[in-house]
Length: 94
Image 1: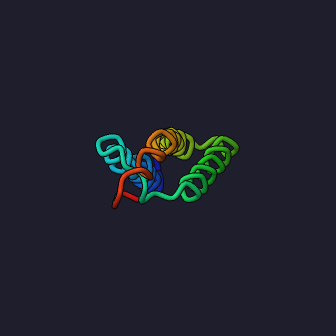
Image 2: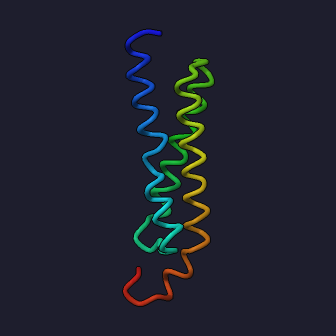
């Protein structure tokens, strides 16, 4: 393993788990009014493309980190869609 692999592992780890605090907050509060669906879709598309790129390069660091990130963003989108209508009906919770 080269030293740059450690940088890739560190970056991948931070990226993989960076959205989890938001997922936990959405799940606990059931409020998503402050989130932007276009942003979620843009990030998800970008992560998917990074995953494809990692598969093309056969780079396990890119593949694993982006597969986990993709799963977390898909979970975030699912929570957004589930709770979005509920958030709109609550005054001051947009």
